[in-house]
Length: 226
Ligand SMILES: Nc1ncnc2c1ncn2[C@@H]1O[C@H](COP(=O)(O)OP(=O)(O)OP(=O)(O)O)[C@@H](O)[C@H]1O
Ligand SMILES: [Mg+2]
Image 1: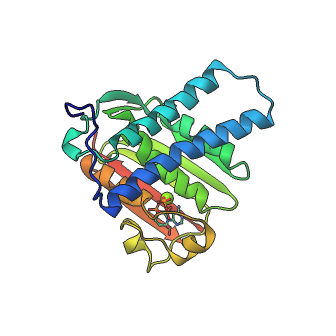
Image 2: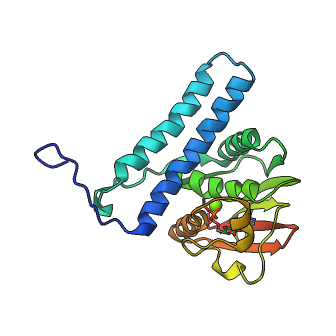
């Protein structure tokens, strides 16, 4: 804020930054909607846990909206925390199972695995991959697997039995606004999720590999140094 109490606002935001912001707003809203729909369907009395989880998503929205129009230099550095991946990944699986009742979502994780990083950032990485896996899969399963590997550090994979990605599209899916013809036909989107994923992986000095077969499914494998 400046001396007049006015929050400085940049009007000439570039389209990539806008699309990233809109994408960040859309995901918590989808989760909130899923939880509210489920609570209404089951006639659940409001519980402390539900309120707590909804509040966490609302706080993310407030943070994202507050960052709109800020110069990157004004944005607070991210806090580094101890992240229990078992808890984080099972939370994500549970939320996406609510919004995708026709799919079978599962998590396989080797014992208790934790890393030190910013929790919102790791959440965003995982959510984007799980969101895509669910969005582009009509039937079958989505499975998340997390394990430690002596050679590669942390291995995190998301596999689905969905529409798959053609050889022609594969080299482009991490580009901003890129969407395959099959994806466009199926669902709406900005073509920003994987660009955000790639940026996070670059910050963490990791790698991402994709194996996919059209009409059969895809696996996104993330390798992060530990
Ligand atoms: N699991 C998947 N199965 C099939 N295609 C996928 C999958 N994940 C990504 N893609 C392809 O990669 C493209 C880019 O994905 P990305 O997440 O960046 O954008 P999006 O899902 O189209 O939109 P959004 O910005 O809302 O996430 C998708 O449009 C789709 O063509
Ligand atoms: Mg996406």
